[in-house]
Image 1 (cartoon, helix red, strand yellow):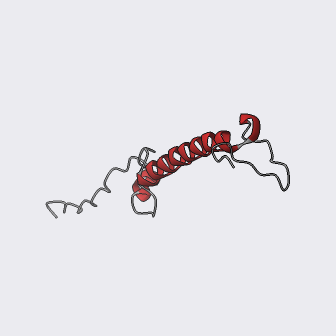
Image 2 (cartoon, one colour; image 1 turned 135 degrees about the vertical axis):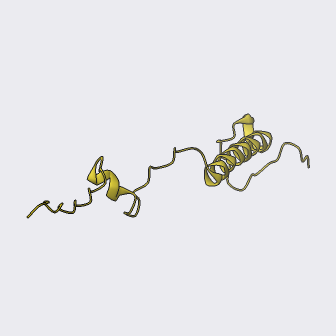
Length: 88
């Protein structure tokens, strides 16, 4: 009975920093979210708002020209519509 037999060592488990962190990469949506910068749709929305503003401004100036007393919100009298730039 001379030598003792060495017991085989059990392999050590790899160190885990955080179990949630380890599983996060395997779960859908587990990655870090990208920063919220403007994308193509945001640019198109901004362009549409600019175009609507320009169209509104142009229609305001057109209404000032044809309205009575240069008030674009004033209504013409029924049956007596006159345009200042068209003389009878």
